[in-house]
Length: 267
Image (cartoon, rainbow, N blue to C red; front, side):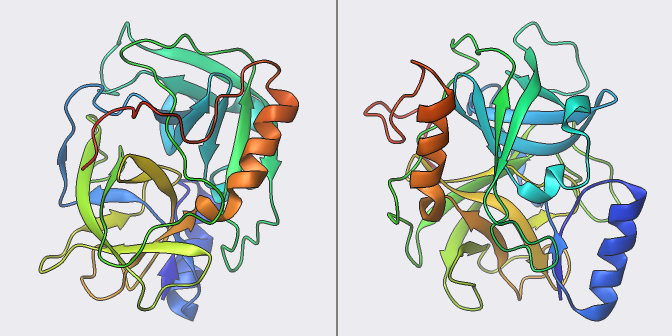
């Protein structure tokens, strides 16, 4: 069974139906992780509506973020707020920068199968880069990540199925696996223990060797099952498409997808 995430009544109904029918369901709170050091991952983004967090995202240019397409599916994007520089969502933080969404770019997203579960959001302004807000590194086209590579997943979602959402950004060490993984996804497990992503806030990044290789998409068999891998949309599969959007709509602000200086720390 595969499952995925957005916290609204229609989405919850679709998730429950997916659980019963064995179809895909959206992911992804962090289960079994630990609090991140404040602003250790300055490219991490909170997507919010009505003042509440509902999905993660990644800053990929001063005026673009990358997230999961299912996070915006059926939503009026004009109601979404893109919050940069956050760490503790329960506090008012002077480090934050908030933007509206100007444009939404998808690439063949299928909400039933969760294929191509990736979206680029253009902001209505440009971020001010500093110690708390930085642009992530992305891989070049088709330069993905192989079996056994150690990566880091992160998010503000629930800490467990019956537990509240985390206020402080959580991170979790995971290992890439290719078994039971679709070709257009990057999949991960946590060896020898039940930990992983779950319902709560999809769209967050999977960081491998300093590059954002995945966008949190869906799970199988329940949260942190220990049996089925968690699935992320493969950023390397869409790298040329992402770069073309930044070049076309970003004006003079289009840094390369894989700049020389890494941001944050590799897991």
